[in-house]
Amino acid sequence: MNCRGCNFDLMVTFIDLGLSPIANNLVHLEHLGFNEPSLPLHVRTCLACGLVQLPEVSSRALLFPTDYSYYSSYSTSWLAHSENYVKKMVKKLALSENDFVVEVASNDGYLLQYFQGSGVKVLGVEPAAEVAKVAVQERGIPTIIDFFGKSSAEKLLLTYPKPTLMIANNVLAHVPDIHDFISGFSVILADEGVITFEFPHLLNLILLNQFDTIYHEHYSYLSLTALRPLFKNHDLRIFDVEELPTHGGSLRVFVCKEGSSWVEKPSVQKCLDSESPQDPRLEHVTKSVQERTQKVKVDLLDELSRAKDKGLRVAAYGAAAKGNTLLNYVGIKSDIVEYVVDLNPHKQNKYLPGSHIPVLGEEQLRINPPDILLILPWNLAEEIGNQLGFLREQGVKFLRAIPSLQYF
Image 1 (cartoon, rainbow, N blue to C red):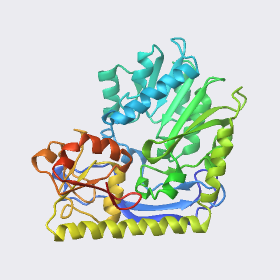
Image 2: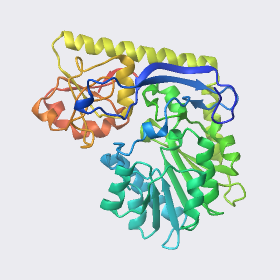
Image 3: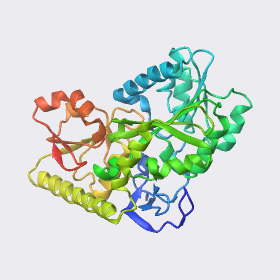
């Protein structure tokens, strides 16, 4: 097996979480009796380029089916983040009705709606047909249903102008052929155009024990150190970096063509310097990740087992992929966690993969409140806590497991 970035032999373990079902493939009631595919979550580090990655063990079509159920618009904080980004980029690039913006993995039009509202022409590219349908029918966002890459970029050029701005939020980690994906941007971008990529920063995964962000849809775990040579291979360069609080700590990198007039800012070297002490090629770094991950498993299972022995009832909030990684790694099932609530109606009345915990609407918390509520999407814990203040008043305890076990 070889590195998807530089083709070097891929032998060194970053972390091994064992076998796990596909995190976003919720189970329908009629399929509960069937065996689900469980695939390895054995993440490796390339000693040559430093790219941390999960070897491809399943096809993109299996991981991102037409009924893929992740809808960005169900998070109010993410919508606010997106609206603020649009205001910033409209000002930074002086965008007008003469410009063209393309978002790759545009989901349900959550972000492009704000550009369109500013009078800028937009296009989304989204492979999940049901999600794309929402963008088109409910928000009027023109959307191409396709996986993005060099071939699809060349097709777009036959119909559309070269974009001034391209956006790819939380998708760079989701592509098995990262070279084909990046080359698509190089093909279609205007000569002085800008691409922004947002992705969870590997540095935070290491420092804050965010191992539950590892699941099969995430083929790569990204650092600026590993990305720079990847972009350079396609005549693209990173000229600016911003640190973001989203998804437990992300990077927004600004990318342009190699010959573009955009000047590299000091933020690039500053980020590279911050990554150096936690380089995943260092043995003591990966050893620490493995030890802290194991501690979360032991602590969470012990705490919930004690709660059950005391007759306390436990529920969870958020049928997120990261939650499924955590539950399946720890070995928690519906005998310990009675149910999980989620605002997304496309997930409700189904069952979490592996653990088979039922997914219900938020009204269940009012009808049948637990004693302990395990918040699975810890990156949204503050937002969720504010939404569920009525539970605190009833004495319900809120618990999160990442980066370590904590009632809050």
